[in-house]
Amino acid sequence: MDFFIETLAAGLTLGAIYALAAMAISLVYGVTGGFSFANGGICLLGALVSALIASSFAPLGPVFAPLALLMSLLAAIAVGVAAGWVLNHNFTLQSRRSGVLPLIASAGLLMSAIGLLQLIQQLDVPLHIPAVQPVVLFVPGVLSVRIAALQPVIIALGVAIMGVVAYVMRRTHFGLLQRAVAQDAPMAELLGVDTARVVSFCVLISSVLTAVAGWMLTAAEGPLTTDSSLSAVIYMLFAALLGGPGSLKGSAAGGLVVGIGQVFWSGYFGQSYAVLAVFCGIFFVVRFLPEATAQRSVVKEL
Image (cartoon, rainbow, N blue to C red; front, top):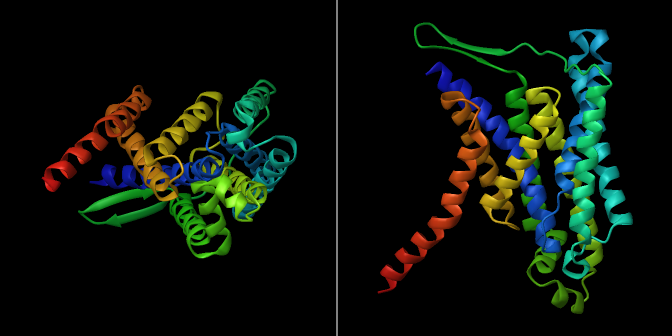
């Protein structure tokens, strides 16, 4: 029971991270009609910058750990804003009109982020995340669970941000414009909607979300390595695909499923085939579940 609760807490933490990143990917997909690797690169940049900022507070001792985490979060948000500004002012992001140019540019950003991470590792730059004492849940004779103190913070932050994004997209005028562009961009433009402006704001919001997801990933698992960063990007793309491209609610659900599935598989069966197991599960859901649902619908109609 103790191991199950600890694994569940870790799975919810990772699921919140993947859900936030998957929502960002789906937000851009909805208004551009194509996937972008830029979110993965921005996530890695946010994780790297937050680790560098947090490491600068390491000599001050554990007393300054909350300040280090706060400053690293602000630095990650700044990275997201800067990345969104660069993408909006230097690349044509409306892939419905631009062909494969946005995809090539976004792939270049991802590869650049991975190369920068490799350079930091080769230079042996010390990266240390301030240690925070774990939370112990102890009931004599029932359970003794140790949960990392940052896990509830990450889960609460992820849920809060996703709630704000969902409210903005469903209850505000900008959300109405975003849904109009996502459904039919040419018609929305004919009706007077500034589609380029809507796309720019969506890219900016998406960049900030993925940068914050990078901070959350660093706070939860420590400084990223090349292997762990690639795995994180792959899982984020899996989550977006599982939830359905362009669906914010589905992407959030897909992120939770992928995060919890990865942690439970790694905890009970080892990490060797976690990616393969998640991929097989997603392939099964995408390939067979829609057909089964359609067959049940036909039977009900008959």
